Length: 397
Image 1 (cartoon, helix red, strand yellow):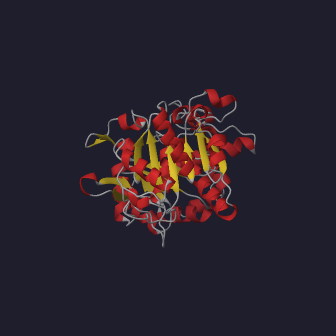
Image 2: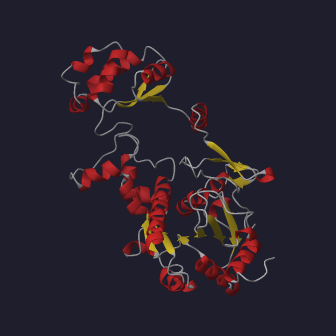
Image 3: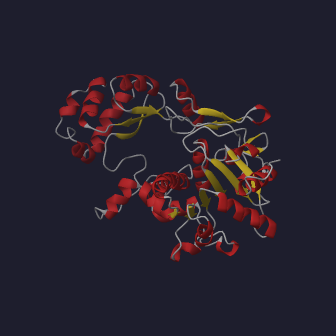
């Protein structure tokens, strides 16, 4: 592999040597390919002359760049290709032919007219793992554009978010884009393992709606397995109590009791040990049925101290709880806990703080060599690299 045309040497990580042709934009696809890049894959991000849509999604900004774009594009190389131009299309086909993995999130069959669809590309690159992400599949749902917010609405997620008096709310992050990106990365890793044993490539198809229904786990199962349509419950849980925020002397405190042992510890610390043996509250079912009475008892006790006091005291005895923080406080907590949440991608003038890869590897750690690329920053280098790979005996520039 002639990676030194665009890299100083092989990349560290478990996917070192894997080439990913990234024909994605916005979030689900780019998040998937960034995870692969963190693990050492060589990811070539193909962008139109206008660039990834998220480059223009501002504010927030860092040095004039969209922090949205920066959040999911580190460790990649950017090449600008206009697929309507014959020369650029030839390069795109060359990249697809060289890749181990191709990821795209065009409209269903949107790449067919360019000869970049799975049947066409796999005919000359049979080992390719071709990953296609759509909003609603390639059947009757192909007509619908795939945006996270519309999927939150159509999947039922928004019907579960908010309170009785608020109406439905969206989740505060594009949750199903992220989950679909995770599912895609998982599928690619499985397909790579299969290929290592058989040499076979394959087509992976994902859509936001299926990922949404899978990600809603117990709520989807309530209907599928139990015939129950879940309803909006604000911050309450349909199966557990106490499992919600409570007011304290200062600030709200989440209390998340998952079993009888935790409930007994909560009651003991609050000085109401007898409540744990009260037949109304001694079982999870009883606590659910009598949550209004229990809420009154717990609120009265928790009002005697601030949330910070209860967080320390309850955590010390193994009761899950948490004050409600903002994002800055969440990052700062992770730093205090030694989780190293911030990883600087790139170096020098192009050093960008990013959120670290979620997996810690003992032998093949994630790397952060390259900052999210400027639009087309690597176009010439990638073309030279592809030519060198096509003609390994040709003298390299």
